[in-house]
Amino acid sequence: MRAAAIGIFSSLALMEPPVTPDRDEARRWAVEELSNPRYPDATPGWLEQMWRDFMDWLSSLDGGSGAGPDFAVPLMVLLALVLIVAAIIFVRPRLNARRAKESGDLFGDDDTVDAAGYRTRAASAADGGNWSAAVVDQFRALVRSAEERDIIDARAGRTADEAAAQLGGVFGTAQAKLIDAAGIFDAVRYGEHPAARTDYESVRQLDAELLTLKPDFAGQANTGFAVPR
Image (cartoon, rainbow, N blue to C red; front, side, top):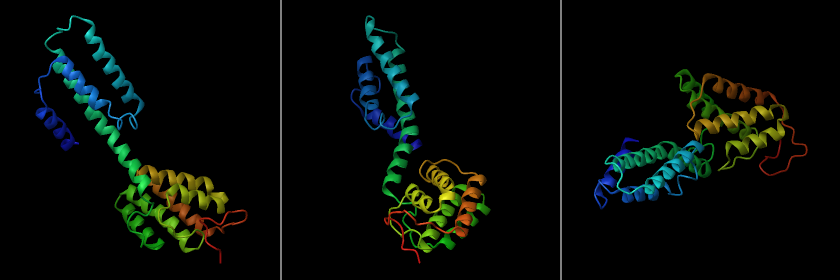
């Protein structure tokens, strides 16, 4: 965040004309930056409304004689910078999360860990109070275990939602819990939401519960499922 803010101020410092523009130039800077399509695609509703209100305010300044008070231009530049920084804070993490979710699978780059290994890692993270890491590895253990039991095929690129949907189809009594667990996993790994002990315990208990259930493949399509032994 600090580096991004420094970059913004550095860019403005190098622009022609210098950092003390007239009113029209300041408004043009704001319009060009804030109208970038990467912002409206992912901004929260309140930020979009703030942007529109700010642009309306800029337009209203043209209604007078055009001279305006001395503090108008610095205030316009300051408000533009505030909105740009707010967009960086709130928008970029959402875009990064979206790209990560679209490009990566639930196991990440390392797909060599077995279910027992993921459970060990989850328990170790939980012992250290790192509930986010514990949730992520515990859900991975749940899915890896299903692969090792030949319930679903081992497949690169599978998302948490896909795994929950497939497992919910053969573990009907645990379907709602699987959907909830996948939602927790996505929120923690991609949405950067902090996890709590209760999140970890719910996924751990679901993992243990699935080990006691017998999958029911009746009426299920073959895609994504392993041939039961």
